[in-house]
Amino acid sequence: MKKYATAALFVTSLGLAAGCTNDPQINAVTGGLAGAAAGSAVGSGSGRTAAILGGAAIGTAVGANAPRN
Image 1: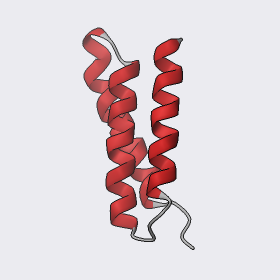
Image 2: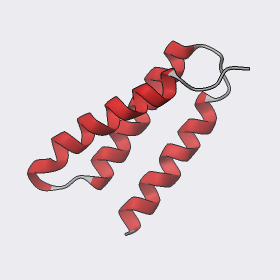
Image 3: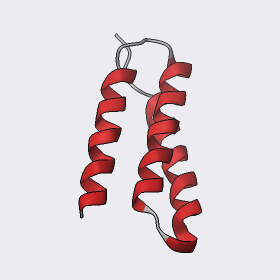
Image 4: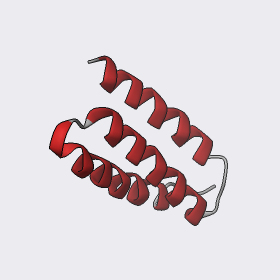
C-alpha cells in the first residue's frame, strides 16, 4: 500500500509541475516520465516492464491532452 501512496504523490507533484507550461510536448514528456516512475514503483516481478510501459503510455496521453490556459 505504501508503494501506491508514494507513486500517487510522485505523479501528482509532476502533474502540477507539468501544468506550469502550455507546451503539449513538454507536458507529454513529463507525463510519460511520471507514468513510467509510477509503473516502476507499482509493478513487480515479470510484470514490472509492462507496468512501466503502461504507465508511460498513460502518462504521455494524459500529459499531451492536459488543459491549456
